[in-house]
Length: 513
Ligand code: FRU
Image (tube, rainbow, N blue to C red; front, side, top):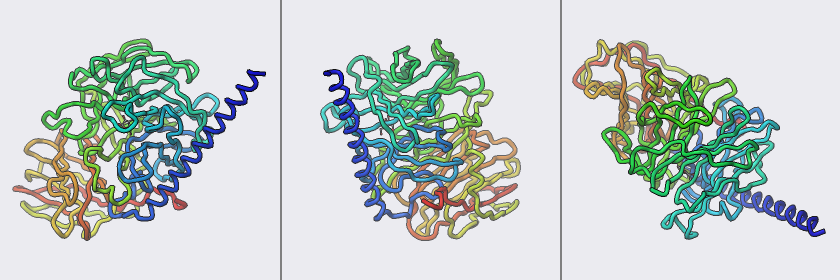
């Protein structure tokens, strides 16, 4: 009798939790709707995933489920600044047309009361989606001054839209200030999970867990410890095979800027090594940035049904939040989806997935041209969202910097992207940007006989892919008002262009959205 009563009580409790979750989601949804009424679109992206309104950071739960690509993301629905985190959600049949879905996960339990933090999602043999995420609490109940209490949680879904059965699956062995961001995958009959942790000696580590049933997890080993003693935590780790090697991607917290590297408030990089189930991870390379721009963090990958390793990163910043574009009622966007490949020298190439070409709606072909020395030529007087494809003949170009001024407005402010022949690097220079954080970022780049650049200019961002994704830079850019022109510019030498095309890029949002 007592057993029956407690079963009924447990059932009642679960139903109550689920209706609490639904109510929280409904409230958050109306928050987003309210905020979207006063959204300013001057910088809101056309072809990058961004929230309808509210704050976005990390991509979460990347998966292919129910016939669609599912992208969840860290989302604060009630303002354009970071706050209580939910999982926002968009989905797509083809990775280039997207649909805004309702908020997927909300903080509805004591263990996730201060945030449904980052995590991943995998599909089981019964076609159920399992979302793994970090339940976050501030220890003092208010803010991060006294560290956090973090546990790993799981929720399941039959349609990718509504989640249920939220539960804690892993608690830290001792009190730990950082213990988060589970990434799960399966090999053979075993499920593997890695997460980021701060050791008792304050070192950034990646911990490995295993499970046979997706719910009960055992600690296996410390997979990786960052050799840099200043690094105290590795956020959002991801481990995946490319060829016969394994790539470990993570966000090292506490890394000091050196030269061109680690200059952002938060930086994401990778090491390549050997790993096999039951074995330790042995790195074979030093740490390399994944992307050299101002705003790239918390990338996550998944394997598409056709076997490609696809990555989305977050183009945003916790360091320079306000006022741009938070005052517009939103903040944060994802990069284009990128396919990763491993080169022979064990560096990563990341280039926009082929489908992105389908977003081109019109093309202006400028053909081959010479830009005489110290000359700027206006290519487009008022460009909306565009992709610029340019092939430079390195053997005939003598210009010190070979570049394109984008987001150039009548007051002269702009972002300058291109190749610097003095340093041999491809650059994204925001020193004369209209609004927000400045600085110049650059990446190594082999010049060869030809230099290929693909530059994606959306309303509030610029992404540069050099030589098929050998070097990538992603940065937010918030131009001042007025027409946004594009110019090509030479400095103390001429530029020989083999081909130059500017494609107008259409929206990624499904017409019903
Ligand atoms: C990375 C991160 C994660 C955390 C989430 C919270 O940007 O700090 O470690 O889970 O964002 O929004």
